[in-house]
Image (tube, rainbow, N blue to C red; front, side, top):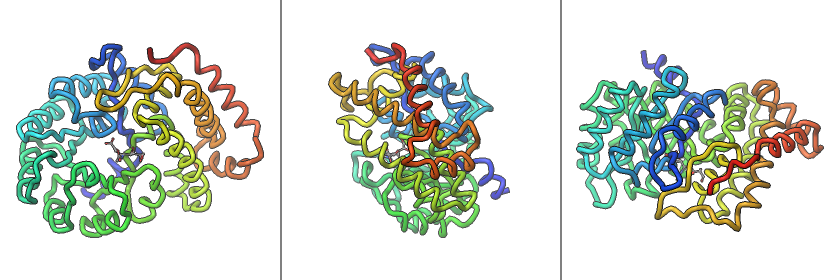
Length: 344
Ligand SMILES: CC(=O)N[C@@H]([C@@H](O)[C@H](O)[C@H](O)CO)[C@@H](O)CC(=O)C(=O)O
């Protein structure tokens, strides 16, 4: 039963950006288009309204609209995990029930933020969500933004419940990740959070990853995951290095989400600007982001996902630095894809 759960949920999940119109309102059509975009990339699923999805900046109704659009588009095709974490427990419970009604596969939540809560308060907050549906629950541990450090004790208590199937580890310590995997047991899912450490997380016991930058390079993370699964660690390390070069550039902009959303826009997938206080992308960054988009597309082409996961990735490592024909094709593809698809 639990092994079946590991098989059902392990893999690569896009921490989905939310889709807004030009006035910053949740845009159902755009959300559907965004979800559709990922359906053919090889990812396992989507993580909706999490950090990258700005769930904490949205009203309960907006979060419901985002999820509904996603479910309308990819229900049954992709595994959908919904972040239902909110400051007020009652909002989280409402979102949990809504997620179940719409057929989501699992719910997940950070602790309530702002108040310095005791462990007992956070445990109760999560428990209310767990008890409100029959859905599996995945703890979202991201201490650097919530200020709450999930203890091994609380994790172990929670993991003892059948409905608590895993934890998303967005802290930077792979030691913590490993300790949580050991405490939860082989049947307990652990998702890597920091995209820059995906391979490290996998080596230390993660069953997959949930990440925001996956959104602009899902194929690369799928290839990386496959390399790890096939035991090609050297090739995997080379690909993680390539990925990190791209992530480093994305992190160099004042707004990571703005940069990623703009890159998606260049591919014809419009999601609007991030919501304030997250900064919008600056006009002066448009040109360098267009170049970065081409680099990403060229890397995807080099890693030959169309030619098939690990095989393509191995070939890409051999071609690295040699300016292979695939790379040039990828860059041309990027030019073709550019069109007029930019955010206003
Ligand atoms: C702290 C943080 O936001 N971490 C991100 C990463 O995807 C992160 O953006 C990436 O590693 C770049 O640093 C994810 O762990 C968050 C996430 O999955 C989410 O959006 O819910």
